[in-house]
Every structure is written in C-alpha cells, then in structure tokens.
Amino acid sequence: MNTDPRVNTDPETAAPPRADGAFPGTYRRAFRRLGVPLAVLGSVAAAFAYVAAVDPNEPGHYPTCPLLYYTGLYCPGCGGLRSAHAFAHGDLTAALGANAVAVVGYGVLAAVWVLWVAAAARGRPVRLGLGRAHLWGVGVAVALFTVVRNLPFGAFLHP
Image (cartoon, rainbow, N blue to C red):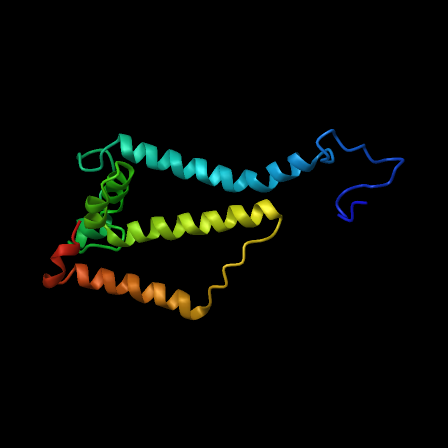
C-alpha cells in the first residue's frame, strides 16, 4: 500500500499503476520540480555560449564599466566578461587573471545549483543555512579584492 499522501489511492478514482509500477503523474511532478533549475541551467549556458562566441577583448561588443570609464578604478566585476570568455574556452589561468572572484563565483554557483537540483529531485526546498557572518565574510572579501586590485601592489589583479 502506498503511504504517499500526494498519490490518490482511492480504488474508485485512482488510476492503476503503470507496468513499471509508477503512478501516473509521477514523472510530470518530477519534471515540474526540475523545470526551473533546468531552465536556469539553460539560461546560464546560453549566456556563456554568447560570451564564448563574442570576444569581450575586441572593442565595441560590450559596454565599458562606468566606474572604470569615469574614475579609472576597477570594480569587483571588471574583467568578468573576459574571465567568462576564457573560462568558456577552458583557459583557467587567463580566467583567473581577468577576474579571480568571478571564477570562484562560477564554482560556488555551480555547487549551489547541484544542491538545488538534488533538493528539487527529492521534492524538498533548498536549505543553504547562510548566516549573517557568512554574508559579511563574502562582502568583506569582495571589498578587499576591490581595494587591493586598485592599489599599486595589486596590479597583478588588474584585468
């Protein structure tokens, strides 16, 4: 006997199980749960494919960073497109040289996506458990990266 409350087991109204033992609608529910994570994956893959195809090192394809243009200072995102282009082409050294924080972000977001898919496949919400200290730590790390890359001894962090 099935104890899943989402499955109608009333013999008068329930559909019989299929030959593989699954109740009708099981795959539809699983597809609905995984639809959003798969759509996000498709969007990210399309964005990386576009950046891989259109080289940000060539002028005129992408807008310039307003902070860099008006002040000459590098923001934490400066070099992010060049980093994504190099990452998409498999050149991890060039990707790290363009924007190390972005490369770390790619890895973190990929791990979070995997956790999201695993939770969605089980029908559970994602629980990351990030506290205030974690968020402050990320903010401080990004701020330090920004400050150091704009100082003379941080020239190795310039895109």
